[in-house]
Length: 387
Image (cartoon, rainbow, N blue to C red; front, side, top):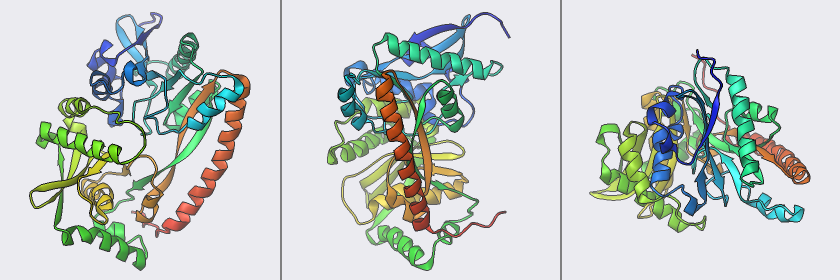
């Protein structure tokens, strides 16, 4: 390995680095949202661009002409599309005389997925390179006039690395379905008591009574019509709720479907020959990630069937280990999704404001522990016998 010094380069678009070089740093089976293609689709489609409050500031380290480390980051002028909700922090900043925006976000746009952010080439001193990237992110944020740096959804080892650099941790809950070795959908149902099993069977059985059929389209079957459908599903849901403006353009879906069909699937629900609902998901050989769903017609239990039951059955058949359906949703607990702690790491440059946020996060952690314990009690699933 060369002993040439590492050189920092900040990229204003992921397209400023070759796709092969960026993806070569990713370990096999990493979440698809870490891939060059995903970030490039976000940026080139006009979804995550400065005009929409997302200014790319990807930190990269180079040894000569070789990329040896990367850290995706964006300078943000709002808090939309992050799923670690700090709107209250932004409001509280004024009490300390702090302009909360811009802030530097470490992570991928609109992707509430626990996934590696600090990517380091094999053979490098990983701890030292991580420390250098983290220090560079802090220096960049200060130079850009940012109030803070926020690393969203890091895995545990990265969260510890950020803490070692002076960040404090904030926790929240997601609800993940985990496969302990089910062979059939009936195995999944067998973990519930008889009352809950009857409820789940009744909810899933409603689809047939409503004349609905579901199928998953993936890989080589996907074409531009499916990209358009995925966009329409997303727009249907985004337009129904007051979560803010639609953030993803239709061009994002077209680009993603063209660039990474190996990682995309679309659940499509039809009534006769009419599409009524569906869900856009990502997958790896071990994980399924629910991203966006939508419906054009309303049917009882349709959301559960499209977003949960159908994909659980499919995941069992494919031997997937984990299904992460996205942020929020305590309704998932009674359907076998387990409370799972996810993290973010934060460094705020105003000392008194940072201490106030740190104390608030510690109080949040106590509430999260309570909710997690209550969720586990509500789920009440029988242990699955060890193989």
